[in-house]
Length: 434
Image 1 (spheres, rainbow, N blue to C red):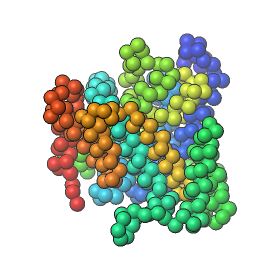
Image 2: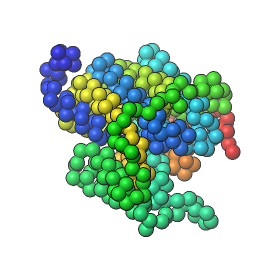
Image 3: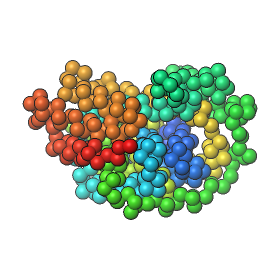
Image 4: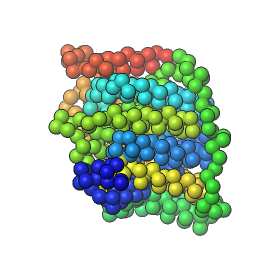
């Protein structure tokens, strides 16, 4: 039955390969079950309910991806978007997490409508490759800094330098260093699920050494979603002051989704002769609907995960791979006591490592073309040094057309980029500076 439903024979695969692919994808991205709630906790969203929302939104989106789009891609709350909400929207700008989720919901509805009318792919394709590569690198450095700070490897300075090295001889920091090195060794040796396995080992060591509190049990019924379910503030987000945040959420999601879809599809051999993904609207609709549900449940923007490539490497070629991944996410609901007990010294190194993995696209930026390099560079450094992902991205949207104008190369600017450039200029004009 599954063979006919997913077209296994037509895609040259088997049930065994698809199950293995789904299992591999889950193992390599299961860290999000721990890391996403840990980041959103900084915004005031309680970790237990946040973990349930993370799992349910991932399972929902991935099931749609499997049954509707029939692609071996997994969906979960995005790294980068969660950090933007927690550390920029809430920590820096001072908005509530409920209002931030309202913006996520509005963005999800916009994604859905734009996908249905095929405008989302048009806007995504308008962004030049150089800026897309800089987004990945900038977000990677942003996440790495959060990880360094969470683990205590880097702390905020009091006098002189704004940051300084932490107490690296303390047990928690030493465990964080151990975790990072263990991840690195496993990755060098191509061990599947290196991030998750390293976090598990480090968490157990933290329990044994008494620097983290062990859970009373490993298995239990999932925590209640009550504290965050349907708590979003949509009306609060429908204000002019929140426009820049909605714009940033919107741009980050469709850029992340498009880049990931093209990247993993190329690896799986799904792209056509022109380098496009046939029926791209189907997987895009899956992540749009998951974003809408995720905001209702109490979590941030969801989308296709690059870790899906690991399942593809194991032979996954159809939606059955995604369905297996989704079912494993649902099973994880009953292991939340362990996941919620994972300390910063275990999940912090994962943030650093994810940041490292996101740096590779920077090598594809045209360093010999200053009209491409300057906007890309400012995007990366402003994301990192202003501690605000939105500032970096919108700066790139303004600078790219500006340098094309002064160089007399305006024909290279896609019509969609003019729209994004104007919106981004408005972002800086009305930004709530404090």
